[in-house]
Picture 1 (cartoon, rainbow, N blue to C red):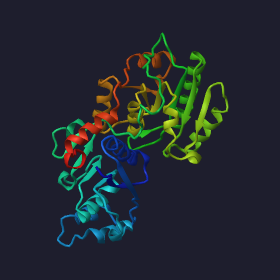
Picture 2 (picture 1 turned 30 degrees about the horizontal axis):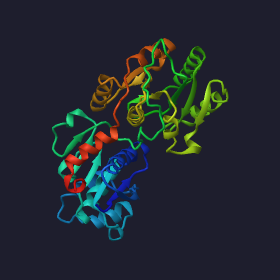
Picture 3 (picture 1 turned 90 degrees about the horizontal axis):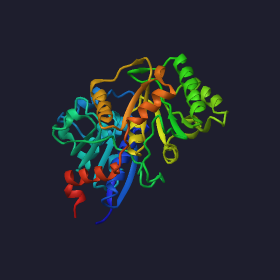
Picture 4 (picture 1 turned 135 degrees about the vertical axis):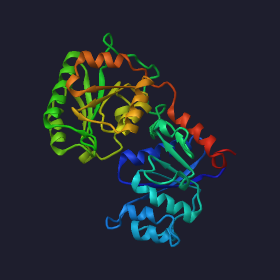
Length: 345
């Protein structure tokens, strides 16, 4: 078959565009894929509510909306077979491009107040959508292929009798339902230092776009102790796309629980994953259900920062059994079933 030509509409948030990249990675397991990436940056003067209200207006003209709201010239879009995007800012461009070019479309995430009929396939991670029309429920897609990360074939069961030698700590920051106090950040650093001393374990630490500057500065100072920290990645200078190197070597991953993407990527890499929560944390109902799913399947556990001790961490790790199969293979099979006109030939 000729290459599948994909228009990839990407916003500026790694947690969103990595979902689309995960879908593209799964497609590549079925067919050669040629990707054109288009950055989506909405003009701030154009309200989202107004854009959505225009979808069903008789005067709705996709090229006009693309030019006016996103500075995209529809006439310059390349030939394509499929549109893919993730994140709320890409909803309207996805609809505009798919209508204008008459293409099937995939959207990853929640539709807000839009109808699923606007898309060919909606990829969700929430069980509530299992029976919803045009929806497919799966683990949040990740572009990382655990088979090519170079990880050992043996999946080690850690616990009180066997502790890891090298762990990753992924740092996020405040989100809609998570608030980390300055004292909690100091407490977290002290606690991972204690775990390192007790177990003789070293850390690879990475910040993210959400991490406050003062927290990144604290971690940079902490990382000067090379007996405790093997590697420190400062997002402010390193940028995104550094996690594959960390996941290739980490035996376990601890990440602040504000980011579903970080949690899901660790699970997809078949690594034991622990979420760390501040006192002020509350997940929306749908997101809470997703985390419960990860916990119930034995891939993930949660620890409050205030309870993070060597013993508590060892007990949590003992309850985790990482994925054995490659999630990209599972996603590819589902996509083939749902999009046979594109992926069966």
